[in-house]
Length: 436
Image 1 (cartoon, rainbow, N blue to C red):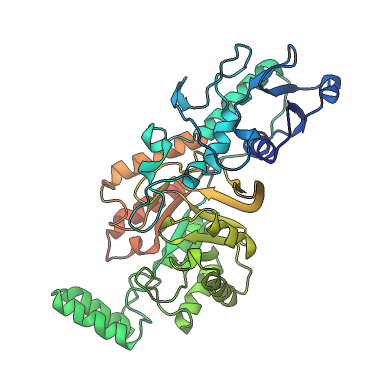
Image 2 (cartoon, helix red, strand yellow):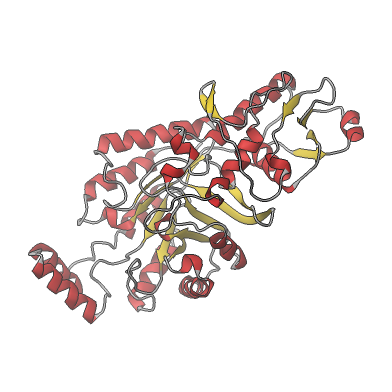
């Protein structure tokens, strides 16, 4: 047990130390604000505050973890050994030159997304507005890197300290905006699609459409048997998150109540974890979200556990509060469209902290670092060699800190209407990587 003395045990302090010590490093920690039990403790301990108590191991703090609400935060990012950091401290006795605990809290809570910023065309917080992008550390899981530097300091002082380290793992996510390309679209949508193919002189697509509709050919977006086949070869905690929103400008899946749609979702759920891809409208509409939650639960006969916001649009804190109210356990939206990297600065799951209410919530956030849903997502995706290298580089970084690699792909990538062999090769490559 590691004992920490702080001037005041605030919800922010408790949240941050539990994340770094317990969830990332596997070290039990207790916090006290009284001096007597700290002095009496003869095991591993340190103090965190403005000044050291004596000659103990000491980490200087900035004000962030002892404040309430949102304030203007002065961020100056500088190089620190092989990484970047901010919230530097000046006390010569401090074991680290930065308050990594405050910096961790700032990134995990997405503090900057609550502050005034320029949104993109569909209302998202864009990667280029983040300090991680601006200061070139978006591609590094800095929170986990800082945690392991902190661990090194602890072991230098207390070499016998024991850590129950977590292991590197991979959790692929399949985002399903369209379960079918041609099948189960209904008469009007099928006729409209056929005329569109003719107008654009897309005769091959028209032929495929007709063959699928009359049952001579498998629908090209029905690629789930390929994914299930990989799962049978090696068990991964794969999530398939399916859109069941009503037809709109942003959501164009087939009707949720069509029997063939139910059938394929049930088939997927026999092998993989199925969750909800929340429609664009439902992200900020509780009534619609409840409706979509009931749809997926009625199909798979299980309580909804997993969510993904369409277009990775997380409206903080409203979207996550709605998920919590509906008892959704895990969200996989924490990442950027069009940019690889660590939106929350971490490759470890963390609990959502509500800055308005100053409380840790039960919602577990899984931050992905690589996503590709289609050409409109990342035009510069590169060739097969460069994609495998990019993914491999992320995996090396994540393995160093025993984190979780979460890639997000669309089911449509594995159809013959896209560069099928390319993306199948990428997913097969990910499946060959060993967990530890």
